[in-house]
Image: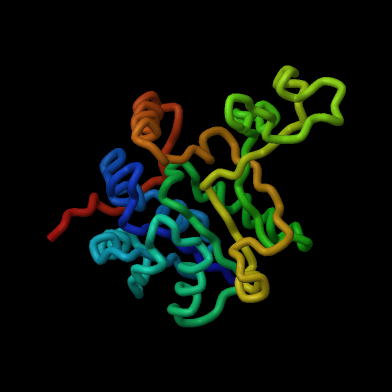
Length: 246
């Protein structure tokens, strides 16, 4: 069986939801649920948190992850591409692993079962360099526009169509999927071969229900709280007591 390592990215400088990764949701810091999901999956030999914050690193260790290094500041800006911190993390840990996964704290309703399904799919798809979580888009690109001065034009060229997508019903449009932040798994070799986190051949992993729900804005946080309160979703079980700063 190939070996795999989980990376939980948790830089401190979130701007849209300040302190997001360590903000408490249902009693625990958000990052705790990413670590719990990775642990429950039983897929990974190690769970590594990549953060530039000593405080976040302390919280990560409390919830059962490793934080053996701090991410350099130049790889922790709002403009830093993922490939930079991934290469740093792979170079900073001991040992090598066949695959790595990105388990982002922003998707708290992703479960261990979600990860197991994705891992099994990647293993069953030998042509894929990686697998990425996607879901049907709600805002179809066929109905998107670019404003050009006083006029606008469709984002996608539709001149070859008898009925333009922007003039049709959603159900009649070709299915288009958008990536979400629930999960990515890739063979480690693609990082060094292509200098990307995903490689050249990506397989879609279709998330179910709220697995792909992401907290990117304050209103998302409020919606997550409502979903939890209503009982419509379940968070991964966290067995540790809530973190308390010394």
